[in-house]
Image (cartoon, rainbow over all chains, first blue to last red):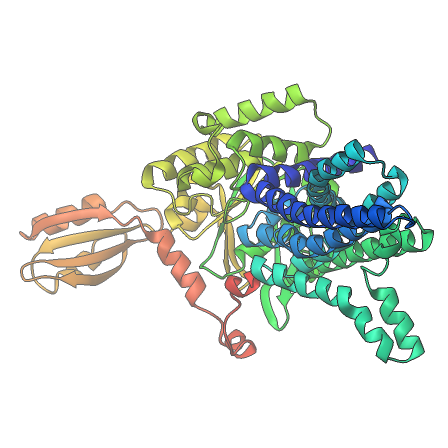
Length: 259
Length: 328
């Protein structure tokens, strides 16, 4: 068991380091912070104007910063993540296959599961670092206002879980191809599809509608953004992640047999 | 140390390796010789546990590669055709990563010592803090060798370790490999013949996925000693040379305006140089050149790899199994 954790951590640290020694991590973090900041400023501006007009009109309920600002902000963050994550996951396996370093990993005394978990955690670590850049913006809200922190925490948990799902899908797709471009684009397409899949829900039959909304990755995020941690959604995300990792395992194994 | 039994690997309809069996003893250097696409890389990939065999098995240091992969892999160092380097790591970072990956439980101090030691051994210590992407071909190959050696494995599998190196580097690499024998059992593949003659104790010649010859380098070369003789003299000199005692066969190989070249094959171990020279001089012809022919391994190789049984050609009418297809 100790061996397993050690091997996973060796690979995860290698993944993380390769992101941070190349420009990838910094560029992505920079742009993520920039785009998130843009949304932040816009919502803040809107929120401030609305609350002021509310004050002047009198009689209106004080606006809730959690409801009116943080919730839509986090929902938007989930969309940015959807665009950025394929660029992180696209190289995980494709690059190793193209450069031949996969031969080193597969002939080392580590199991496929350890390699996959290590890669997942390393990539997930970079994603958490991306999210980390947003903490500063929200800290400002706490400094000048008094938002509730519990719903915010639930929102971050939701973002982390959703990102984990994206990473596991990206990992799987990356394991099927040598080309980073193909890997990145296919991941983006699949994520986009999973995002909009519930748009068809309204016009389809009751059963299909239920299935389609259930599959929508972002649908499950809504409750988190509102500050609700529902076991149902946590289980959905966790099982989706496991499923993605399982597919990756099968894909790596198949490649092994085919050579 | 290594035992390969009835190993067969098929990629769909293509048979890359067909019922290959061989053994490698402790401390031996085995040369794996064959034309490009003969199945060398595929065989090595099966032995290292990179891919499973379709049929048959490979046992390394007493562990079946397929059923006990971790135990077997712990004892194997593998240098693939292209050294598996991470371009954004320095040589030291890379070797540290590989050491942790291969050994697992190792303290940082121990790991650093091992990395230093291996870098010295493979003479890459002067590039320790250089990024792998900025290394020359020779250094890449040596870092690849360092990577295979870092956990001090019983078995070293080297896929064309000298490919793409300059002559000086080739000699250095060969010497390094030779110095490793004894402590390690080594299998190296190549399609360069002199390399096998110089480094290996035993040779396996493989063609189209089948073993066509297994023998010691000496034995393969024995019984094929022949001389090249160049004389100034008449056409029928061949008959005179043929009557020299100990000579089995004489054939004219080339001719020029005023000289003729012959290949003189001796019977068994007979040294016929003196007799041949005396005959030529005695006849009053000019002896321009007399030297043993050294490229005989090449001839054996060509003989063995081009003389395919006819029925086999019918079995696989399309392309012969190619490693390139395997890389796919």
